[in-house]
Length: 249
Image 1: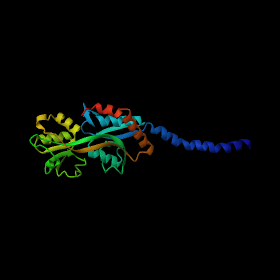
Image 2: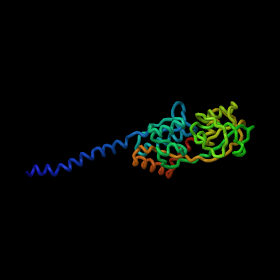
Image 3: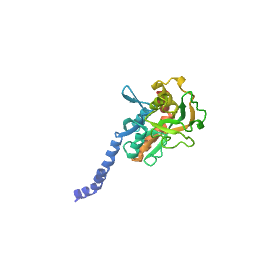
Image 4: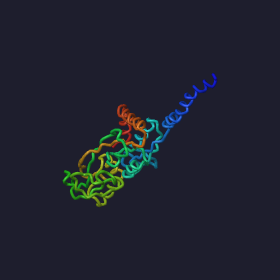
C-alpha cells in the first residue's frame, strides 16, 4: 500500500512534467527558427554586387533577425512583390514606407529612417514647384504610393518602372519628363546608369517618406516584441547609423 500510494502521489508530478515538454521544446526551437525577410531591391537599401545581395535594409534585416534569435532567410524582391508576400504570409518581415495594404497583415514595430522624396527632370525642363509637374509623364517605382494614385495635388501621368535605374533610362530616352523617388536612391541610380550631372536640373522636393520595419502578425507576439526591442536598442547604440554609413547616399 505504501508503494502504491507513493506511485499515486507521484503521477501528477510526472504528468505535469510531460505536459510541459511541448512548451520547452517550442521555446528551444524558437531560438533557432528562421525569419523570412523580403528586402526591397531598390537603391542602397537592397541590391546585388558581384552576384551577392547587399544593402542597408538587407544588412539591417539580417542583424535584427539574428539579434532576436532567428536565422534570417533574406531575399531581394521588387517593392510590389515584397508587400504582397507579407500580405499572403510568404514573408515575415519587410522594411518599407507605410502601406495600407499590409496594415492588417503586419505590425509596424518602429521607424528606421525618413527619406526626402524629390522629382528630378532634365535641365531643359526645370521643376520649380509642384505645379510644374502637372501633366508631365513621371517615372516612379511600380507598387509605390504614387503609383497607386497617392499623390495629392500632383497631377502627373504615371510611368511605373521596376526601379529608378529604368526610370532614368526612360528620362534619357525622352520617354518621361522626370523621375520621382528618394533623393539618395535617385542619386545612386543616376550614377549607376551614367547620367551626367549637366543633363539633370535641380531636384524638386515634394515630400518625405518614413521607412518602418513591419513584422507579420502571423508571428507570435513574443517574437514581434523581441524584434521591436532589438530595433530600439539598435537605434540607441548606433547600430542603425553604422549600417547606414556603410552605404552612403
